[in-house]
Image 1 (cartoon, one colour):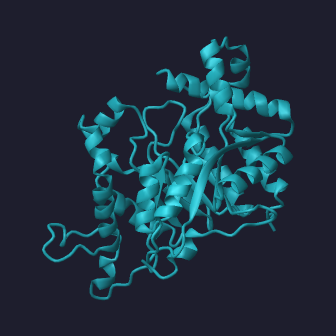
Image 2 (cartoon, one colour):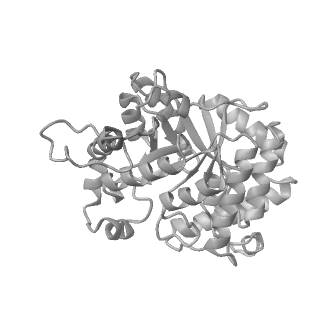
Length: 366
């Protein structure tokens, strides 16, 4: 990997933010909206994030969820690359067991050629969906085998990205293109950049693996908050310096929604939480409106889930969100905060990032 790999990984904090701020986009689709609407919102948010000094913008692979239009991260990233010019773009993440490593190396090599020096490759070992959908994706019902093989798949993918399979390996003469092989061809010139690989996790497995390999680590605090501190501690304890990093670097995904008044924030996060209730009980759908959520008759068990879920969503006025993010960063020691705003309307999500940028005094467009 290029010598400036660490520089492509580590961001710069702006304004009064304690660490770099980034965006995780689930490309959520609200009731009464279309996937086209959601993707256009993604472009608007990416442009805002770029203009206000957010460090990176990731999209996450999900499947068979009507309210989440991010089944094809590479396609969405190409779309965002065409509408931005500086912000880093990446996957948060690609679920590697769903794909052949060569395919991912080709896709992200293509993205790197489209947006040199701006692409991150975040990898997870979960399916990003239910078991039946995962079986359809992989054309196999041996799902545990895919997760167990993750270290081997990761090693294979890395070899394809670096084009360095050893002599005698059955893949020695197979090359991911675009990729380093082009520099070795007569007259060949190759970009010095290679997408940095990140490991994603919601438990200790990927935390330990990322540490052992000296890779950057991204933890899904937004849906596994109880495991955040133990996983980050494990990552730091396991870390071994590598050609990529000489010290640990960890970001956490955080659900955060800022609105102009506290009451509206509560309405919006209630709707997003109802969407999670339906997803967790096998009834996935579009993100409901706040009005639908307010009229919904929650059972005691659902209400308990809602309270628990929203306890980990940093929401409220801009000042309240800033204070909550500052406290979370201090408590976890995260090197970067990646914010995901879940709400019914794209305008609400866009406004949230704008308010958070203002609260931290992030740069304003010239």
